[in-house]
Length: 147
Image (cartoon, rainbow, N blue to C red; front, side, top):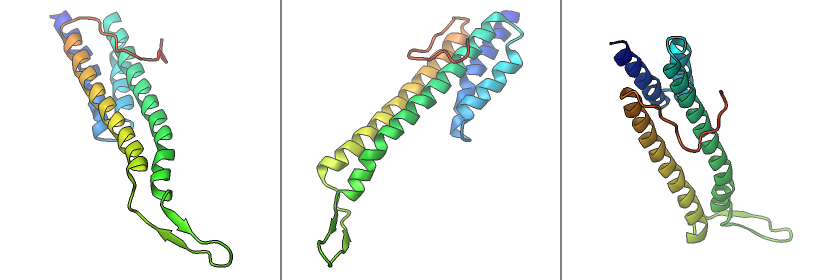
């Protein structure tokens, strides 16, 4: 019975990352709080909690980097079509008819962010199911912030 309770708690640690859909940084804060309250109960809960927190911090870092990379493409898509005059006749025309080239970069990065989000969703569910079965799960591409 104790093993089943431990597996359920490990499941809850991983699933608690979905709190990120409810409030900002919930995918980091909630697993961190759940892990901190349960880590002294067993080595398995401690390891799974660290893994869940490290994954969610790594994912947030990857999304932050992707958004920084996407900003120039977004700005280019907006300001690429601004026209101005020369000499004493300075005027600006804002033409929001975005061309295919600048819009393609923006859509491409938006698609990349969406795909990364789906991968996160699948990995969290996979980790929760494995933890509920009592199996040790390691997320791929996770930076070990907490060892």
